[in-house]
Image 1 (cartoon, each protein chain N blue to C red):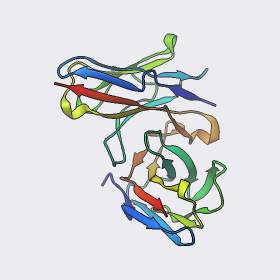
Image 2: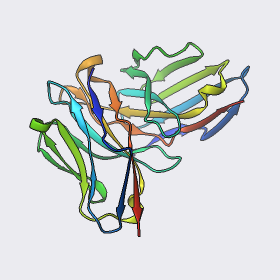
Image 3: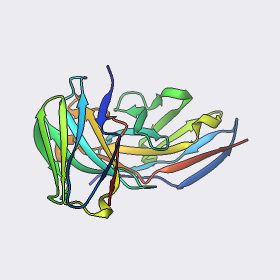
Image 4: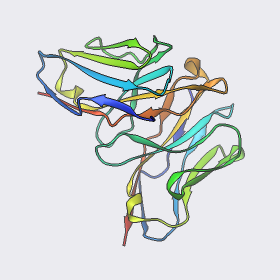
Length: 115
Length: 115
């Protein structure tokens, strides 16, 4: 199984809503990532969890709250978002190799629209 | 911080022609380098990776890339383009900062394949 599964595929939410994005992998990877991608732009790193601990937070606004309940699951809790937060949210995972982390495997993403 | 630069945001080739997508990295220490492809409304798929083993790396779908330390380059090539190769291509670098767990993308190159 070499898949990273993200749910839901599409999400429309109001600015006062609370929602969560979910990501799951069963490859035994010990690092998981959240990226945000705007149209015609590269993915931008938001958060990294290594061995279930938050290791990188790229100064993301607090209305985005990550959670890693176990080594297979990664959540992104959303609250009071703004329309400019509309984007494709990508989850990825990777495994350590040769002293560094190896290639990242990506999910298909969640297309988020904030209205 | 380590980064990659992709020259040419748009590349157009004829079907059957050589594909050349350029990527240069900035690092005093050879990093891990990757090429990913993204089709519309999908996640990123790994094409190939350089992890300091062979300098000529072969990937999926007939793509390959050569790591040239003297030129700090990792250009992606394919001898004969196919219509199905039309997509967005991202070069990415994983460096030693952030515990070696930061994967940073170039700005991307949109490949168009014409009949």
